[in-house]
Length: 272
Length: 283
Image (cartoon, rainbow over all chains, first blue to last red; front, side, top):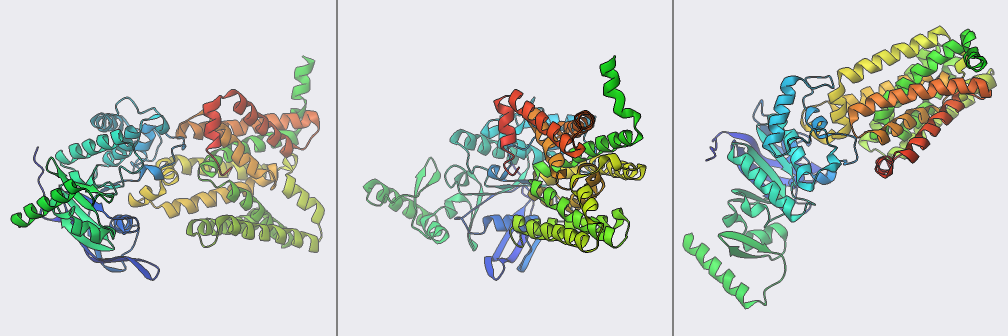
């Protein structure tokens, strides 16, 4: 199913600056997210990825510039799994129901239960309503929090490091899930450290290190020049099956790698 | 027959009947708030608040102000102050609570020492005097119990969201700071009305033990919120009766019964349940 991208931004950051005390962690960041987009933000630790999300969600004020979220936009926020208290006494059903705070009582209504069932079925979690969150697999745990965000019927889904601390299989599950949600029309914004497992599969990437270094599809952003400016260290990029693969080790002695890089550079130059 | 009569003997006394009602209500009330105290890692705050309220109780006794008004205002201010310090991380939360509450506690003792009537009042507040409670005290506990029950039930989902995931609750538009203030106010008022039953020194145990026991039994927040007050009320009921027959302090006996229930649950509940309570590492 094709995804329609609306030209009117849901989120508009213009020359945004964010500071903790006197020190700016973000400077002059301009980023517009339109309805239907699937955007990943990459950058090293301390590059301001989480601060940018916090500014967008309104938990951090802009010191300069502006952040505008279109009026009435519902944000579904999925925290890092590492930040969740997995020992908290709570079942999957309770995790979802807590977001509907307009209804105060503990007991869910019939329509809420029907909606819950639909969301859980859609994410492959059917029948787990009564399970404690710790009793789930890594992939199911991440999906529960996506389900909670989806249960709030969000206009945009924001995920903070969705593949942080998960195994390879779970990472695949999450990637498939997010692609599926995007194909069904969800707008998604996420941060990630995972350049090969997640970022390279996204349609749009923003490379961030205090400021926006590059913004575009992975083929234009996951290139050695941009990555060196973003991460402050030389990184090599290979291409496999039409996807860029970032190597974070020093393979410069490899003749094969040098040839491949040379070939990719000449291909890029000829495209330009 | 004789045993049954012996067991029912204390109920012949009106003061014991009042004590029973007060203690059972106090146990249930502390059980409800104990769930939040335990899950939010506020055990030390509960302990500190009870000491802070003691300062207010002493000041109101010396200044001949109504106990509930004087200690209530003092307790609520202390609770909100502690909550703000803990949330804003102005200094280490433990250090802040230690300073605010022990200063208040020490101030209370100094006031009572300086202005007479000391010993009896101090002991009553420190260890409780459940057999001396009046119908006014019971009415106060009942009113606070109904208010806390209504607030927790009416704002159940918001309280759960703010307790489990304050960051996402904030993003979702919940007024997390207001919920925290409300929780501190409820805790302060609860300590205020129940301190005559159980005493300042033991009240934090009544906040923590039933909730920690309930945590071992269930993995569901809503069930924990039902079980904890039930355990609290039953421990108070049993503790009161035992204290009469063993001729021991009511407050101390209630806490010993609660501790015994916790230990029995811990031993019988199995490894998984023990891990659940071990995860409450701030206890």
